[in-house]
Length: 371
Ligand code: AKB
Image 1 (cartoon, helix red, strand yellow):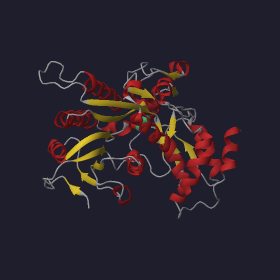
Image 2 (spheres, helix red, strand yellow):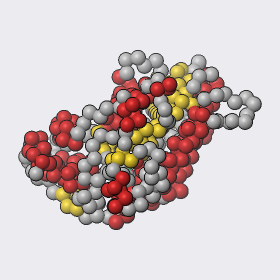
Image 3 (cartoon, rainbow, N blue to C red):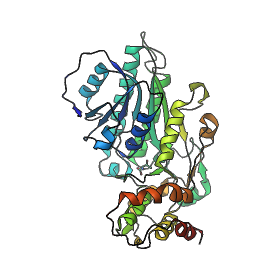
Image 4 (cartoon, rainbow, N blue to C red):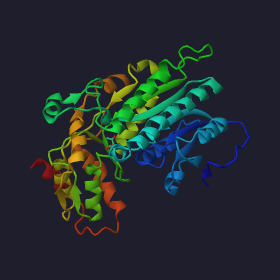
């Protein structure tokens, strides 16, 4: 049974725990499964989300709390109840949603991150060990001024174009800096300061595509939405131009990169924030593959100027040489490989009652991309 924010403290000795916020979101789904299955796991998994977790996600957690990362009282209770050794802070309002309510996005994305970093530092003070902290950042931290510059820039490095055009991008950049501060400089002048209470590690993720879940509130959602709509037998209106190009990766790759970075020895890491890259299709590449795989797919392009401007400000691809060098990042999928080995075989089984008449034809899909 889920524990609510009102549950009384247990009073027992504190259990070592890994805390996952935003546990019910897309990434939480994959990450909780991977953490639960880890052979050498020594700590309980505790999940926090604003909504009750779906039973299949709840099954991967030892304890689950319904509540908000801005709720100080709830975080204080978690501090008292558990000896938190690792935090995966996934809770966030994404780029499209954030543009409708920028101040709320700031409160959740920056305020929530500050609260979790403070919780990590207080934990480190109470049990005397550094708390590992994972922060999923985003390609939204980049803000490229125009399409000509985007085309000329190619794969951007971590230190280029960090002038985001969205509140979400500003928030992620702020979160990266706060994390670095808690890791290296926290309470610099305090007499009772403890050095390096937080071991902060972050990845700037591209758009993520999962066969199991649908994203919501993001601007990279057109890729996964197109595939899920076709699998479900629904027509799809794509909100960006066919030539729009940003980087993507599959959910298994996103989870793999997270675990690799978290397992890397600290001495190997030369930065706290890393790009990762996998494949960089344009929206039309997606459409051709989807049409090839689902003969009934209906895809139209009807660009929304606002969302298009966000996609145009994000890079075509990212330079991930630092991640390759420091923690052996090595993507497994090309776009074709992702369709062939992961997306198409898994996605159709998610929509058993779909109206799609023709079976998925992976070979035809890949041929379509070559044309
Ligand atoms: C979004 O579109 O906001 C996210 C992201 C790229 O971080 N998926």
